Length: 512
Image (cartoon, rainbow, N blue to C red):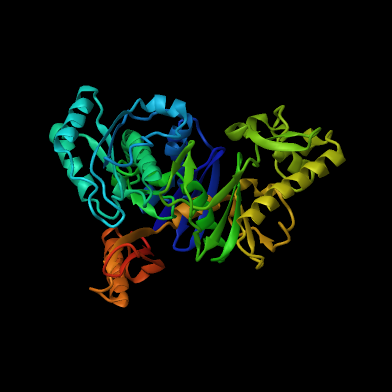
């Protein structure tokens, strides 16, 4: 049985067919303005060229930029009602502090603070103000707001108040979609609240995207289930996309890194994914991207849910080049590369033209860049190397040599080693992102506080692992394939009973 992987980038939409661990075929098509039609065109083409019937597909995995673009471009976002459970504390910095003004204006939120929340040791700051929450729900109803974000102080440790507040809101708004911060982020009220608000704003778009993909896949004869890839390299089922669209916003770099690990056989390496617009540089650990340990910005908003630790630079195949200043990027022709680059008959000098003129790349018509001065070409080529080397050096955590994996269609811009490290391009490097989507696994995480005076450390870890394993199986993972990625223990000295926070992450292959 085949699996199809599709990844949408700013310039290209890539698709691959996998049979077991074999890459049967990979293709690249230009990303379309509406994204969805480009995804379907890529899938139809890869099936047609591989002579594989749609009925032979066991699953379709898609990495999409729909939700990232919506936030960055301030479009297709729903109006949100925001309720923070905190009073009489945590009111000095209100919701939306530090947000870009144009994004706040787009969301046009209704914001209310009310009694509730917890202390760091689990004690209530104050009981819920039921009447205040019901007034909030009534205001949302009158304003026709049915996308609600509820956050509470230290709610990941004690989510009960958020859940009760949601029940009260649903009494007045039975069809509202409510996002609870305890289901998304970690400790840290502001960043967790920000992620919750963004998720609530994207929910309606998530439902439309899920239905559009589903209808289109069925129209092409594909009856297999489809999934979207998440920020951590795992899958989210189609029916859950509408609930948690925010979890997919960084799937592109993650897919490329997972694909690089799969194609090269390297579990620990630095991955440089060069596309048509940008280059993403990240670190592989045990075959998965290293996660960021600090707040990550999305569209100018600080969030704290799990995101890959990726450094992005404005270098891609479509990057604009100024030879007089030896400047490359960050502006790019993007998906218009095949229309505007000199080697394709256009009138814009791009990084791809420099690579062809230097003899590094062999696509297009080299005669169209024959007029470029040899010294200018050499200087620009060296500048591209320096940009990537600086990004690689930034991602390293020690001076221990690690391999550098070059992937992405734009990786043809470089030749030789990077930053003095052994550098290689694995097979099918140009569609590594789609490969990463196709091999994505089911992943689950358990984050729980145990009192070690009541349960020993080994028993607590075993319990967390058992619960996580059960969750992976319920999500569709193959039991024999389940592997533990990491176990984190954090002693909570301020809680009684030798309290320890245990986080377990497990992955397993998808049952087709």
